[in-house]
Length: 380
Ligand SMILES: Cc1cc2nc3c(=O)[nH]c(=O)nc-3n(C[C@H](O)[C@H](O)[C@H](O)COP(=O)(O)OP(=O)(O)OC[C@H]3O[C@@H](n4cnc5c(N)ncnc54)[C@H](O)[C@@H]3O)c2cc1C
Image (cartoon, rainbow, N blue to C red; front, top):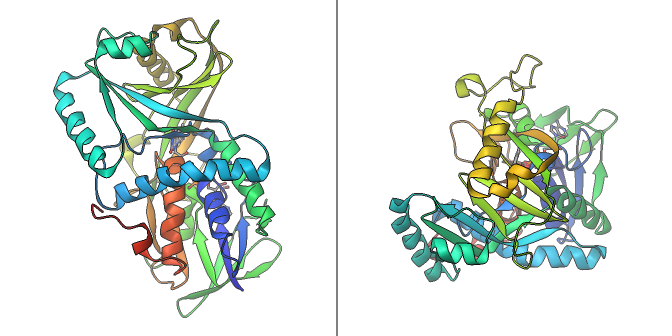
């Protein structure tokens, strides 16, 4: 058996654990310093913007395409094996307020059609017909992506963990990885508080803290924590057209229907002072206090395209820190320099829920379990 230790159990670690667990030759251990589905994952809205993204080729498109494709089978697979549903939404509408952007959307629509994915571009009137709750006065067009949507991040992560456990994955909670024992570029053991774990491979999916662990390599990975605030609201009655409730997006603010008149609104994008990477572990002096003015600005943006939000009660609001790699694109999925058996799968910034399945495919390739050709396409 080959033993693989996955460090961190947010959406990325949980997806890796579940996806790799179908390889029966692997002995998989997932380790988290706390409990699963904390970190950035507990704050996420779970919006999946893959087809509607403007990434059309290369790694960024491949990760999105692989993820959206895998989500089509992953959710029913988990629901069948656990006997419960995982809340998710099919379909996403993005409002375009700038007429000059329409040609860009038309060109994306043509590209996606050639790749086999539908995108519809609606006039303001077509949007009004399908989503009467939207104030279309300032809208130039709406882009409807039937294959994007949303999934509940925490419920999905917990479902992945449970299904992975059923397939024999060992979990270690409340167990921070304190260090890697290295011998000539090979990590042979992980130091946990109460044991030393022998390993053949280590995957670091520790979110922001991956920066801390990466310092054990020859090329540390600085990370910028980017704060996001979001809120849950409740209306007196559901927004119009209850038979069609996709995720709505306008001015980079998502309105996610949860059912029973409740919606999530989010999220702000707030950089630390100076926009710099910060020292790890995160010190108490890190000024990342959620700014309520920014939260209110976000609510006002939502009201501008969906006026009913003004009447909503706020049930709760929360914040989280997104892991944004500094000096390289998100996410970082590659070997940790200086080690032949340690892989970084981290730094997913704003798209960790979207990109987790594609990340697992890439990691399986790095582990030599599958070949790149299995997921290749001519555009990539
Ligand atoms: C407000 C907000 C909204 C968002 N909305 C979306 C969205 O709509 N769609 C989307 O795709 N993404 C969204 N994101 C981004 C998404 O949440 C992240 O990209 C994703 O959760 C990152 O997952 P992760 O598993 O890499 O990290 P995390 O979820 O942060 O998990 C890392 C885990 O590692 C553990 N850990 C850390 N150090 C150690 C150690 N030394 N030993 C053991 N364990 C350790 C932590 O305890 C934690 O559980 C949003 C983020 C925020 C903040």
